[in-house]
Image (cartoon, rainbow, N blue to C red):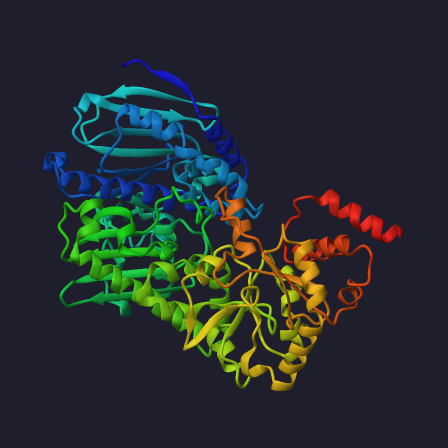
Length: 631
């Protein structure tokens, strides 16, 4: 194909372009960050492909980015000699957005133009930010390994369509030429461009070249101006940020590097930069983000840090370098020992990778411990911010990482009957009553449901703290976290009620006497509810409520069974146990009431509803209550 082809943008791209050109203009300069980042990625991809095919370097093995401008033509051009694009790749990559990141992008817009503009790169749509300052973009490219006559020119004014045509292009790589709008003339300045590069792209490991400027006197020595020469100079540090000594890197540089690799518009909560030496040598620069990405729970989304080997980019999202419960961590790991041709499969088996994974996991946990255990109020606020964003993910580690189980448990935070948030297991243990042996917990669908649970009544009366677990992952976590500092974790909704030493002998004797006197009524209740309850028994855990639902120690809790069913999974069928409070007025009048069977069913249904369960036959319940009220 040599003639021009006019093609339409994918609908989502057209929608995005309309937004970019009409709305995101309060922080225009981010367009340069995005285009430089794309050019750097293209060079990284060439390096990687050339590991297996050195001929791709052709006659230009030194990779670099060039930024040039023409004031008269009002154009700004960003050129790289990276992997380049074939004609089909130009159509596919510049006319559509893979997996439609746009729709998610649109959903995340807040109306704050500055924040919204920063979101662009996060959704893989950074190229289109060029239309913030340009009314036309021309891309010329040739993919490494293709003939010069197999180059491509892509042109668009950012409306509904774009043109593609074949061209002859001697040099490998891509040039993106922006035809700037009149109100974007400020970017036709060496000083302005250098300032943006220093702010956003100084850490790019490739040299960014610009033409030198020199002073030229006017005629008759009157006036003068800075003019561009034909000599090129490097305007960034052009060394991998992580390879520099820590003392030479400012906090601002660390933060900008994070924003570039993560496409996040907010600064990270914390970072750790270390050179590890020994049997396995590597550099790690790891970041804890300040907020969860939109796709944190997307199982199909690859996550992980960037892997380099001796400064050579190998892969994004190297999942083998950190466990999945730390998938929110961003950063770079640069190994001195791994082979350059390492594959994802080899990563799974490598002894060096195992050492890197263990070392990096410990480093991340140390960062979190530094915040969690700090006496600084700011650090405590940061940790609680982290916990709200990522606590549910961190809890997954309790079943995945037995080696660090104790460290993880210390990092967990919960609500309790004493505080709505921020309670650690260590805090709980310090506040335990004299004679208390277990850490008491209850899982529920929400904090309000947990607080209102009848099972808590005796604990409130005695001032015993109970942890309130409301994350969907909590029940699963409890199946792996059995104890903390020698104290077992005990659900107050499971098994027979026993406060041990917290209940004095007089209370126990009184409870036994009441239970004995209540035995005939108990037998009638068992008969009336034999199809619905595994057992009916007397309890002392209730103070104000007539009854509550519990399950046997070895059975699945009703809360977990509901979660499984909501997720479309099957849960084993088991009958609950009804516990009744023989001191409650309603329970006391049961035996003498002629509507005993109906009252028994109502008692069971109400206990089920209070626990958060659903009635199998709500209509029958309503009829019984109506009949009772009408009597």
